[in-house]
Amino acid sequence: MLDGVKVIDLKVFPDERGSFTEIIRGDWNDFLGEDKLLQSNLAIIFPNIVKAWHKHEQGQIDYCIIIKGTMKICAYDETSGELNEIVVSDKKLQIVRIPGKYWHGLKTLGDETATMVYFVTKLYDYKNPDELRRKYDDPKVIPKSINGKTKDPRIGKPWDWYADINK
Figure (tube, rainbow, N blue to C red):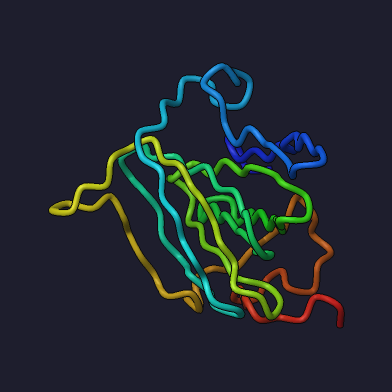
């Protein structure tokens, strides 16, 4: 993973009434480090929709959990060309940490609308948002490796969120 990108499995405690899951705790020091979460957000993303690319230059870090559906979350380091591709789902609850210094985005996979809860370490400033944006199909996003691998057929080409990786 890119430095600072982390994924942890969440513990689901089921019983005859349903289940309970701790999404994030302030004492998860190995995961949070020095981060302090200041805002929580809910995003609903329709099937096959890409929301990319953006990054934060003032140190914001995002913590994302998919509570319904399946999504692909990607983080891209334009200096090294490394791209992390993480598939997360409500079938296996995980929380993903993305340092804002990386270009990042997501895509809903499958036919179901996805729901994501995410926590951030900076309050959103409506007058001066900490967001740089580029188009989801920016031809300058060209991975040199994906999840540390260099033998993927998508390497060396502009990133295609819709590429069929099963071909």
